[in-house]
Amino acid sequence: MSKVLVTGATGFVALHVIGQLIEKSYSVIGTVRSQAKADKLYKQFKERFGDDVDLELVIVQDIAAENAFDNLFKTHKDIGAVLHTASPFSETETDDFEKGYKQPALEGTKNVLSSIKNFAPQVKKVVVTSSMATIMNFDKLADPTFTHSEDVWNPLEWEQCQDNWLMAYVSSKILAERAAWDFVKENKVNFSLTVVNPPYIYGPQYFDEDAKGKLNTSSQIMMDLISSSPDDSHLFNEHVMVSTDVRDVAAFHLIPLEREGVEGHRLLPIAENFSSQKILNLINEQFPELRGKIGKGDPAGESTIQGVTWNNDETIKLVGGYDFIPLKKQVYDSVKQVLDARNS
Ligand code: NAP
Image 1 (tube, rainbow, N blue to C red):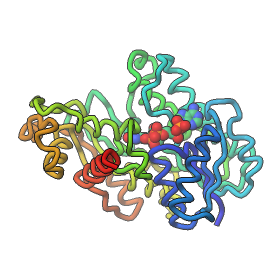
Image 2 (image 1 turned 60 degrees about the vertical axis):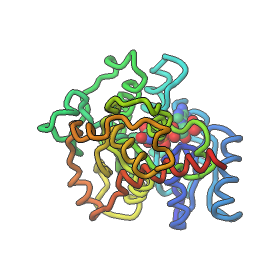
Image 3 (image 1 turned 120 degrees about the vertical axis):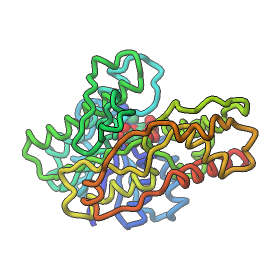
Image 4 (image 1 turned 90 degrees about the vertical axis):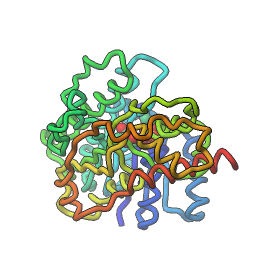
């Protein structure tokens, strides 16, 4: 079996992708930003899969740097598929959003695709991790007549995002995904492109030890709720969105490697709608030991929150049906892992 390259191997999503690839006996190359990160990751995977784990880690310090992937593709002629997950998704210390989000997302995507075109004609499949944020129309989130589906594009422009890091992130994802589709339209390439557009991703960290301390951005949103005050009785409607479990998102990255007919499409893996209040209700219901120690908000108010309207029938048809891990289990597995890590 040819090798699969996964960019951004240290990421929340990428670790599950790599784990699932190894379980299915793929040879994997992951890119990381430093030798220290490579050493830590390699040790973790060796502990999980044994000394002969089929994983190599290569350093690509900055995906935005010119020709960032050229050496990798020049020296690894056995890569047959590329899963490009790397992209910054955390609040940067600088307010230089161009450098913090736009360049790594956009140039990183263009760099990997042009290196494949120039140096890796043997690569047949490319999967780019985009986001449902490239579909979401923020003015229509509470409009039940507006359906978010695979053929919808978020109209947000980069110029509208100068004072909010999250909007800059969203815009960077729109630019990157558009650039990927344009690249395959404008260039003669040997590979097919499939894009995965996940909404908010919850679920456990791949390695339990990584559940200690600050988590990746989406997981941290859930964990912030277990730090809420027991006196807090407002309706928790800060986040009203759509979620999918990280294990399902990872599985969607493997589908294009194994199934014909998904190439050239956006895949929209969605489990269900959520609000912060719905998550808080599920935490209080499933963790009696936390009741009275964390907020309960306004449990009944949850049913009054207007959720996002979406339809992913096309995706489900393309992948031949799929049972998503429900929010209740996403919440249980995420919170349990963090509580266990804190108590260990
Ligand atoms: P994450 O845990 O923050 O992982 C991001 C990965 O990208 C890390 O490996 C990071 O390396 C790497 N990276 C960032 N900037 C880089 C640069 N300039 N050069 C090289 N590597 C760089 O995020 P995640 O949640 O797994 O997200 C993975 C992908 O899913 C991203 O494309 C994100 O946009 C997309 N996504 C995530 C969510 C979600 O809710 N989590 C939802 C929709 C889409 P370091 O670890 O060294 O920083």
